[in-house]
Length: 416
Ligand code: FAD
Image (cartoon, rainbow, N blue to C red; front, side, top):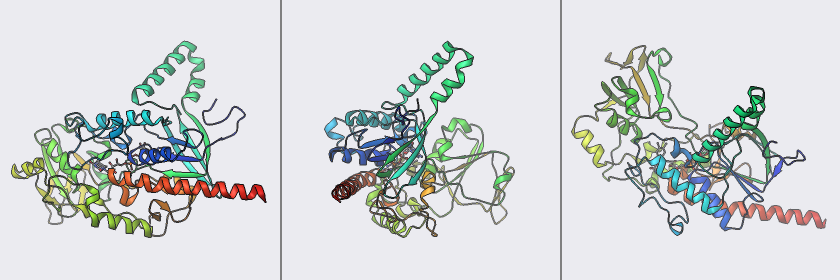
């Protein structure tokens, strides 16, 4: 049976669907639980990742918590004996965050359904039909997902080759959830951005984006060009030093180095305000790093002093074996690492037709300006761990207000 459908074949109903269990989705869910919503009956959280941790579970092995930016605790974490301030800074951030989120989800009884990808959201006039595809397992993290996959493989082996199709169908099911409100909290990790340069398609070496980067050793002995002016690009250049044969670091605009050693994204008031203006106007969101600058951490300063971090303007074209600048200078390259950012992950909302002519979606205070039953958590000015936390509170209140209105309308119709 497909999970998500009742035995009678009807689509499952709930009141609120939260898409995404990263910092933003979890924060909204925490507040919704506090405001009385019950998991399953009122609230279903879907996430396409195999485990807990949101985008953090996919980040590269060498990334540590607090490498440049502060990671804020989710609401209520301290009361649960959880928190990032005291978390292990020597372990990979992806493991630390995944573990903390797993315990958080468990304490909230959130029963996140994963790996479940929302493939399309359609408006129903005051509600939504949320189409999903995935394994629809709920609860646990990576270990549970792996155990389930193993159990499936065993069942397949026991049943013999003839049953493989049936097992496959059970492994990837599809379904529809009907909801009165949708909170989209899908982050950006799934929508990497790579700018176009003449000759990009002719390059014979490897091209990888931040989202494909695993470890410096994958690029051992290669001439590597790193593109980008943010903390990810800088981190890659530093860890490739002594591993790659050479590194060339280029950035579209000169890096705006800050004096402080740690950046709290939310404290970068001007950058957050600019994100907010763009979100309200439905414009494509500007790059965050262009507004915040890059903190001068001890590690970064040491990289500059050792001559490892040498900024160059970006090249003007790409050739099969390297990159070329306008003045004719050429750098040989076996690999180009595009640390050039991400865009909001919104493909599954395409049926709602929200895109404005300006290239973005119009969002005010976390709410869609086009559909009062649709919310965006972690979007634009909320795209940091503290921004996502604040979004949680503001959005949950609006969601509950919307549900109360729906209840009042229903009661009115009942009387009429
Ligand atoms: P995510 O963590 O990306 O969560 C979104 C979730 O939605 C994912 O679990 C994904 O599986 C799920 N999803 C996406 N599409 C679908 C779909 N169609 N169906 C179902 N599920 C879906 N911010 C900080 O404050 N401090 C930092 O140190 C910091 N470091 C960063 C480092 C990097 C490299 C990047 C790219 C960003 C960093 N940020 C940092 C900013 C980042 O926005 C925040 O870290 C925050 O965790 C993002 O939370 P989120 O919930 O919005 O998104």
